[in-house]
Image (cartoon, rainbow, N blue to C red; front, side, top):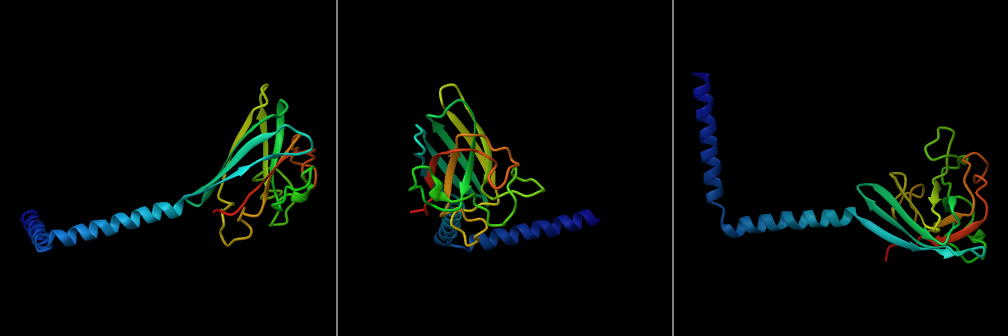
Length: 199
């Protein structure tokens, strides 16, 4: 008997809901759907930001390349592609100043380190800079690439410890040993790119 009673109540609820929808005009239903669609589109547009950095050769190198930063769902992904490098491993970091004017790239300053920690491998419990990306491999044709994703960066947010705008991408001739202070003994700066605000 209890099951029959519950079914009867459920059926009545469905009939009531159906009547309510019938009393809504088609125009009102279209307006509601349109508003929801517009809200969803705006939300998607706000979630994705992208900017590209063109790299300049430094210290007499033949480096060329593009670094793309994409922010989505509170994470930033860096995708970098380079040519004109010697075969082997090379270090890449974010540096503190958006200035590539010096021929040797020193105008970009030191590693971006807003938390004032020691240099180290990304995620190390001993400490690491927010600009300590690491190393990437270059093949015999001089081509190399790296993809890096983190929730500790942002594009143009109000958090100075996360905002990468106003920084520079630096590629080094050598390898980051993740130990030497303050920059991993990565050697000559052979590429520099300014991270500008989103236009």
